[in-house]
Length: 530
Image (cartoon, rainbow, N blue to C red; front, side, top):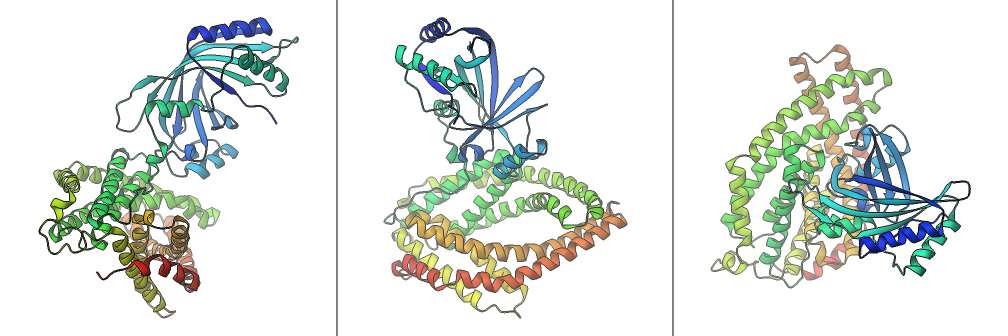
């Protein structure tokens, strides 16, 4: 097994130059001074590469960009020489690098998250044949944060001395490490450059994951807990707003919409903890915001489906979908412009301002003298169990009433109720055993996937026919394109029929005796009359 690079923090430049000088006397070598170099760490907004234990570093080498994917422990994964930084995984040339990167980042844009500026010297340790057997880097480094919508700030990082191995020369590398640690008493650090940079800037990658992480205690007042949930959801809306405005990738709008839907769900499902007029006001306003984002998101989804649409058709028909790609792209740009206008509107700014003001009010003031708020002071553990148990019973009853003759609308209603139950489980997950909650959410998600695919396939058929009509009006609908769309609709109809057949099996799994026992044990025993 090949050794890995070892880094040592230094207290001064003098210490580093002493080590370089001593190493050059002990081992034959060639000293290279390199001028200031700039490198950029690329990652998605939600740090998907970092969460997977890796980093993607881009640096210039003449007119070429060198892209290095490395694990956080220093192990190299992939390396490529490109003309420019890729914006998405699909910008890379076809091959293992692209496939592996796509499996992690998917549709998310690769953003410049940190810029590293470094200068220093490298000692190339040579053998008798003048071949490099190890390298010793001495670097002074600074980091600049490049977050979306934030003011860049630059901070100095610890001066580092790094011993780098060369494949096949492990013994020489170990001799260098022994010199640094035994003679100079240097202490290796386990922190890589990216970790040191994140610590210096005070960045926490998990904070941008998009997952709901609010922590609640069962004894908290229900109104206090609900406000805490809503504050985190408001922050998610704000975190994604700039990415939505710039249309950086489709997940910004997706996460923005999820936060809006969760906000409305908590308003309507966690009953009697807010004043009725407050619930009605903000339920209406967030419904408007959800509707405003809908058209752009719908077109985003169809653009994401285009590769699947092409793969669904015979090869000779695939090129005839290009007019559909053009149609979707143009209309997505138009709808996005309208969405930005809504985000620039006074209605949107007033919504955020009044919502934040309400959430910042102390709960005692919000609840004082309001007899309708009977649930406000009840411990949230009881409120959560009550609402989840009722939502679960509704899903169970409705699903059990569906048979082969039930209309598609019945599955659509069940899908909506499953979504409401899912939101409740996610909003209150911190109150319960995490392993049990994970099992229940996973079981529910399988049923949701089936119901969602069934509904989505039905909607796609109607929407594609509407697109065909719109394309005809815009002069884009060639005979070949209409034929390709017709074949595509037939394939979607066939897939929908299979999802309908699969429903009974998926619902039976969700409604199994084990899952019923889990729901009962977690939620029914803690419920109170609402």
